[in-house]
Length: 116
Image: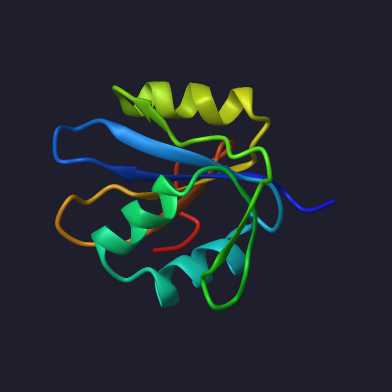
């Protein structure tokens, strides 16, 4: 079983929008795919706006769930962590920068970045 993850983008107003990633959420896959294919904040936000993701292909295209769950918006990073824990996610892939799309991935058990 592969780890699940939350993919999130920080918005201009400081809130976070996020989706659940069901398969291949580990940093060696998800973070690399995000860094290679979603290189602008607009691209990251568009990915998240599509709704919950079943899997993320190597070319960055998401396979969405058929039920069409929409992205969620959280007011703080703490709320983002609460959302991810509620989804039983192992990692959070987040573009915390409003200007650039420097993706970071953090496992819950560690505070250090798994990739940048």
